[in-house]
Image (spheres, rainbow, N blue to C red):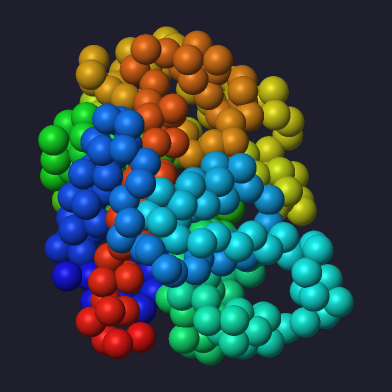
Length: 310
Ligand code: ASP
């Protein structure tokens, strides 16, 4: 069983833990598809969603997940809270604890911020993206869509192309997929590949073709212009031409290969519209997987809290 107060990253998640989350998430996903939207595993609990960065999918799917589980949700927009008055993260955490929140879902621009929060609060903390560090529930939802398609993650070749350097999604996927026995091939301009990823198990490819060759999954990542102070490539047009994926590139991947993207997508930059809207694209399915995975994470963390008397 998932014996954790918090879900902060996949760097230290075991195969058994990931499997447990995916199994329960698959069950929730099937139930949502059948129209079930009230599953009271979090009855009487409060989930606070504290975002210091923009989001559409992650924020709404955490809220939806908590609501489907019967929890009360509170939404804090950092710009409209006392954070804008200079309150520290630790003090914000103390306030949320004093209000008896059971879970805090946090997105923060600084890597490591959820670790600091988790250390100081009694509530369970779920990392919804910390800077360029990790985004564990995104990788879990990606893995859920992959596992549902192929039955297992073992032996899959997952090609990840795009802004790997600034991507917390790439890192969480690398950790999770390697643990689950998949191969992770990455390709980007050299300026968008951080050093050391190969030591963490990624296969850094010299060309788009090498990354896509025989891939089961083609994952595009957004060029994160908001995190790029210096120009890492000449222009978006040149990026698209030299590093983006179009329909003819897809022919290199396996005929059954699926296309993923965490969103938001820069249409025509990392993937062309033909790829995004392709019949093998599972980008919309990822969104439903997102709700299910977040329900599973909250439920399992709550089971642990019950066991611990928290
Ligand atoms: N939504 C993902 C994230 O928050 C990917 C992205 O923003 O490009 O990391």
